Amino acid sequence: MFAGTRTDYLILLLALAGIAGSWFIVRAGLGNGAPTAYIYRDKVLLATYPLPDDDRVIHFDADGKLGVSEISIDHHGVRITSSPCTTQRCVLSGVHKHIGDMVACVPNHILVSIRGSGSADGSLDAVVE
Amino acid sequence: MPSSSNMSTEPQPALARPSLAALQSQMRWLTLLMLAIGLHVFEAALPSLGPWFKPGLANLVTLLALAMLGPRAALSLAIGRVLVGSFLIGTLLTPTFVISLSAGLASALVMIAAWRFLPGISLIGVSLIGALMHMLAQFWVVETLFIHQAAIYYILPPLLLLSVVTGWINGALARYIVARLNHG
Image (cartoon, rainbow over all chains, first blue to last red; front, top):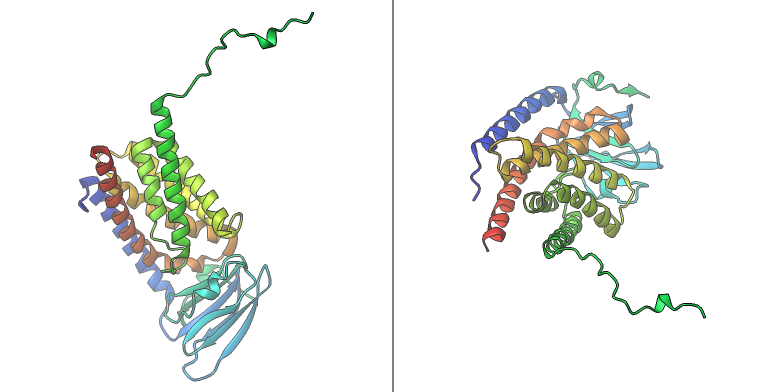
């Protein structure tokens, strides 16, 4: 039932090769080091916070297109605790802590990307506000 | 006396009725549309496996329309299910709707092109290409229209890998369903 044609397998092979290549490039851009939250509004880098390994809780208010998205960062990870968007998908997506994770409030134009502390941020056109 | 021509009892020419085959085709399209809308709403209620990631069950119905009714029916079904489905779940004209419609359209167009022009391809390959295009189009629309930040692409490779898996499974299911419907 799941067997494809020769063309299907060729497409699969090309797709997997493309994904592997892009994954390799992405991993290089994510950097090593401690997981760090990079908070953006559009192209502007609003703040960066290393994820704390103690009991500290960091609150950051990201001023987006619709209003303020409240972001909480602690040793569990990063989450958006409140947002002015209607769907609240960003809030419902919960906690993110691994390098490569992200949480975004699309209507409010806010993105939190978790990368290694040594990631090459300049390659992503970020502007520090 | 005024003539009573409007009361004439002469037989009027019969209205042109659609053929039975045309009616059956429309009925099949409507049935598939209802199924696609139901799956669209169902998928919206599922817990998220990742940002903008869905199993693509509604796309499976677009595949069925493509194989059974042709490219025009598949394209109209992809648009119709996003319009009605978004209305039902309350996301009409929101960013979610824009992302869903753009990705659905891009996916349907690429699947139609693959189905018509790639020799030896089956519904599995078509579905695989559609799933990948759906994911790529979503990220491109989010980056271009909303987030304006290329950092979102960091999460794309694992989601593309999931799309390969779901695309292959959906394609196999679509091929099985089409075969059963054609011979059942």
